[in-house]
Image 1 (cartoon, rainbow, N blue to C red):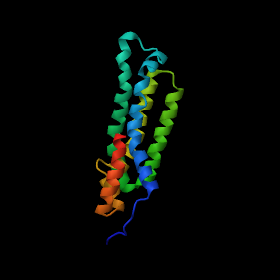
Image 2 (cartoon, rainbow, N blue to C red):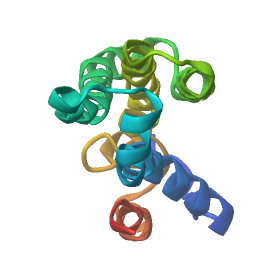
Image 3 (cartoon, one colour):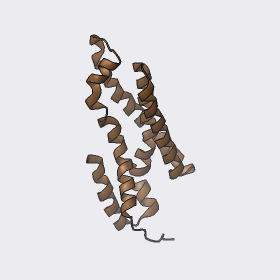
Length: 154
């Protein structure tokens, strides 16, 4: 049975674009403050390169938990997992603000990556097929993918 065609609203496209851009924001927002983080966490001079682990553990959490959220999305549904993932990300981001030890920052960044695996998988899924398959016909999906896909590179 064919589903009724759904034309994406500007609001829906904006939401998907924002969710798609969260992954990049999680990386790009921390890169400029590496020197300040080195000073704040008082990393010794021979350990300055350790600050790069902030990005590494973030990507590690993101990559490990994509599989989990992808599998759970088929059983639980996309919306609850999306909200859970964003909630995990927000709580981990808040914990980074209040921590004073570098190892705790690394743990919080891993959890941030894990939380952002949900929007990454549930909105893009590599090439938008999970979202587009459930909502749109092929011609409408192409336009949607073109609009939201650009937000990856913005």
